Image (cartoon, rainbow, N blue to C red; front, side):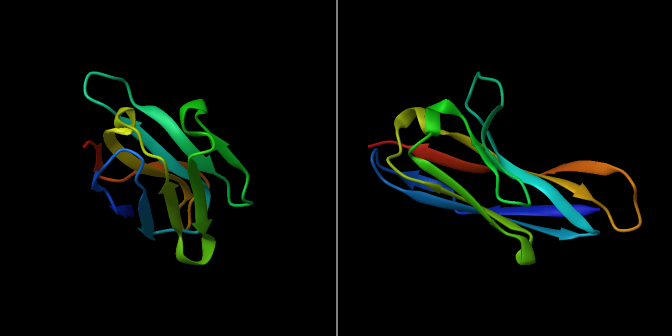
Length: 121
């Protein structure tokens, strides 16, 4: 199995910044995509940003120009630098990874437990 451990959430004022981290560990042969989703109260979970092992990135339109996703393949860790935060960014942020487990031929998706980000004055 694979565990994803997130950190870095919290309370921040509008216009502020936060950096989320997510480290994957366990039965990992290699990781393809890693990324972040978020879910606000009463809303569906939505993709925020994703990055492939080769560094190709994808962002939701609502965060383009404000958020930056990056990853350290050697550490199996993905980061999300969030700048110019807005109240509408308030949500639980979930990390995910598409993993090829050691000794397996099938890719599996794993999720973190979620970290709360609250943007409020």
